Length: 239
Ligand SMILES: Nc1ncnc2c1ncn2[C@@H]1O[C@H](COP(=O)(O)OP(=O)(O)O)[C@@H](O)[C@H]1O
Ligand SMILES: [Mg+2]
Image 1: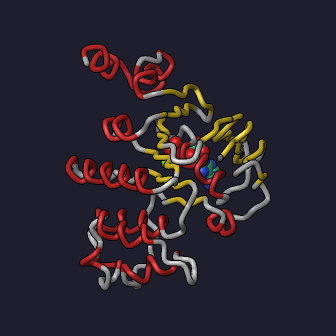
Image 2: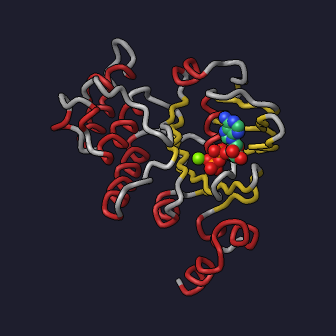
């Protein structure tokens, strides 16, 4: 459904992403992990069109979208949230969601998502007074209101406690069960990523160094060396 072929991005002399090729199928729940500065956010920026590729091709349903701008990529089904929250603070929760809804269409999943993500009794609350956890969830529901084919979440569990993270994971599983929307989730919380995602991509210094099931990833020596560290290897081997 979404295919990247040899994509890359350089900022002056800094190669942030290099030669990344991968495919995400409809409905797939994928993780994207790697050390700070590995290029994860840049990859999401390239897919969502916030930044243009220095190299490579991106196709959605076999159509090249390299020349489609970010706004139109969102319209054709590529939605994302940001590592730094971007909601309209003076608008209510309901208004923030309505901004993203297509005129005339009322996807029932959005109304259900408002409940699942615990925003129902916050609909008239201005976004500026929401708790951090609610803001994060508002961003996700707002992205879902675009009825995306793929939804990319940049560190959705950052700043959440263990219970909130677990609830978020359940809500995202609900999204996956109720729609064909593929998810690409970036996070440093490996427990969260490993339990949610069926397939995980690992970036290191801009390059895709591994892809596989959570089990394959925890046992991959290159991934352990680059990111997971020995503690994780031990934990995995005794699990
Ligand atoms: N707008 C930018 N201008 C210059 N360098 C950038 C920019 N965005 C990211 N980079 C650099 O690209 C590399 C990858 O960053 P990023 O994609 O944010 O990594 P991650 O999300 O994995 O932590 C880093 O070296 C970062 O400093
Ligand atoms: Mg990042």
